[in-house]
Amino acid sequence: MGYLDFDKKARHIVSLSGGKDSTALAVYLKNKIPQLEYVFCDTGAELVETYEYLDRVESFLEKKLVRLNSGKAFEEYLDKHRNFLPSPMSRWCTAEMKIKPYEDYIGSDRCFSYLGIRADERREGYISRLPNITAVYPFQEDGIDRNAVYKILEDSGLGLPKYYAWRSRSGCYFCFFQRSIEWVGLLERHPKLFAKAEKFEQMGYNGGSEKFTWVKGRTLDWIRKNKDAIKESHRVRMEKQAMKQQHKTIHDVFSEAADQESAKRPCDICDI
Image (cartoon, rainbow, N blue to C red; front, top):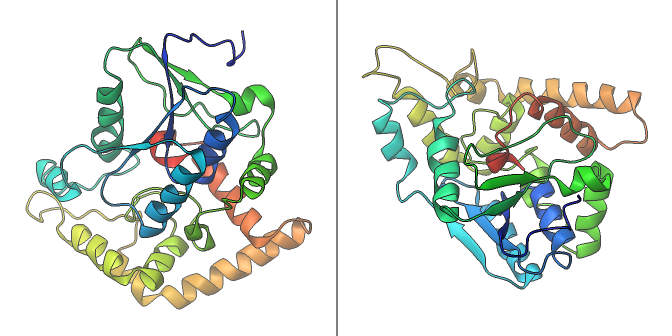
């Protein structure tokens, strides 16, 4: 049974992140499943480019985008966790600020949750432990890969979010999955947000008795001081990689590197 053989009595939801894959999925399904609901789990710590893009997406879909939130700011959760920063090993930000509001919104209703995991990816994404929520993968069923996603967005007129000029995925401005070059991008384009993330980092853990950083082994202060070297290293690496794949752009190479990393971390309610 394919995803179009759906239970019309159930709820059908696409959770948008402001990224390319979930947006392309919403566009792809727009006329296939008329009763689709579109939601966005807003942490309050998203980039302004994300909010702007979602406004355009909402207009294209011609249906209200339900904007969910946990009712608390990140600072409140950070205090609750005694200034322990979220990390790949402790993703409390995703659990408390994304997944819980989403599952609360669904409640006990029977629901099909549509995920934008592409056919060229080897991952499952967010799967709820609740028995009433079923994950569905239309792109995998229909063989939609990265290039097809780009074409869907281009044909729709939406294109890519502006942050893709320097960042490989959606998510909070302080996302711990950002690479050093992406932190440099944040520093140069949103210095106030970089400074705010730096302040969170400096707060440490348990009253400052132990220090944790957003980037393993590096502080944001180190990234600030070494931004030129980081940019040059990234430029050389991307050019070498592009030369090996001459038909691809620097952006394609950048995106592919991020996708390879994504396979190791299914935070797709943030990430897709």
